[in-house]
Image (cartoon, rainbow, N blue to C red):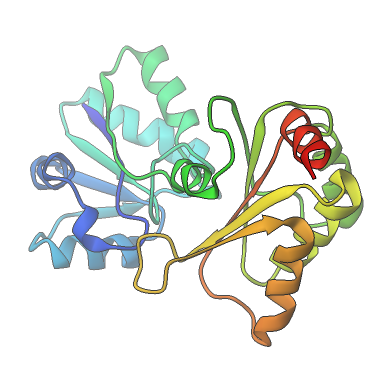
Length: 232
């Protein structure tokens, strides 16, 4: 049996009883970063056999994990934080397990983009989650243009040292739409900045230092943006 286990995105107290039980019962814990997941397990008072499972070995390790599960071992899979398969390794393993007839299930829990979308103050009845955009400017612009006319609220992930470039690119593609920047979610210094993309840009420029922690950028869809502009 394989269990995809959602883990805290910042606050270790968010580890659910079911997640703890999944780790406790596992013969092997497959982790995106064994050191980080190891600290989580240590905080929970657990010590387990661990193997690395990340984007660079996902194809090979998916086959290995399915083989072990087929032999009767219980496998728990975790990413650095959040839900496996959401901008992290996972879908290859689900597909491999399904094809092999190996039982695979999920222990639900934190998802950063859902929390960011809800806290943004923008409509969440329709959300487009695109994960991390490409690093190169031309590819990033084409990536963003796909959602130019979409009515859905758009959610993107970005690293703290590239978030400024992403905001600039979004301003160029979407104009000065309503937006929100969420960072350090569930942590002591959780912060959500709401306004327009230009205000998010000004906030980042005014900090003087690079923000810490993974960032979630939430941007209004085309219809909401149009209504917002007309109301002013």
